[in-house]
Length: 231
Ligand SMILES: [Zn+2]
Image (cartoon, rainbow, N blue to C red; front, side, top):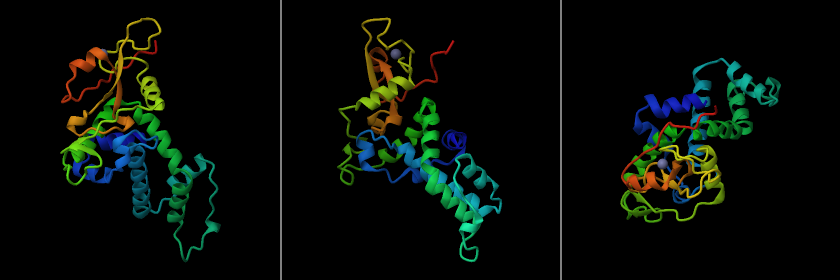
């Protein structure tokens, strides 16, 4: 699932299709981080669409049955009246009711750890925000195409970003943990800047050192695929 969504965002889908499946964006998620992120919403709707698409296109129900078995969810053809309901729609509904949240959370764990994915995902959102006008979206915008800044990061946000980036600057990899060096200076940075239509969702945040932060202007979208080695 994570591979499917990663390909969708990084490789081969027309951006108009993606931005229409990301919108409408919930205003409160644009303004400040929410534990059910914009990416969670996108994953849920992609999975639902994909399940319904597979169910329409094929009579093969094994894929649905094996998913339900993986999660130990009970299903049986005896539960439905075949004259009224079709077996594959029954299985899809079981998946949506019982597994979708788990599937979304698990996929989020994988994709959130991939900063390059987060950058690309937020660039698509930024194109949508950038087209918004202040007079129609005054609750979320500071000016045309620019989201209001969130001035307060909840602890769960700074901890998750610190943990994901392993206490190192996302751009230069310098150690910001404060364990072995004093004088470290860390900041939470918007991967896609607010000026370019970035939003205050945790998928758009990274850990950065003060020096990289001051070199990065409000008009530059920068991250890296650098991660500290395990050994
Ligand atoms: Zn740095």
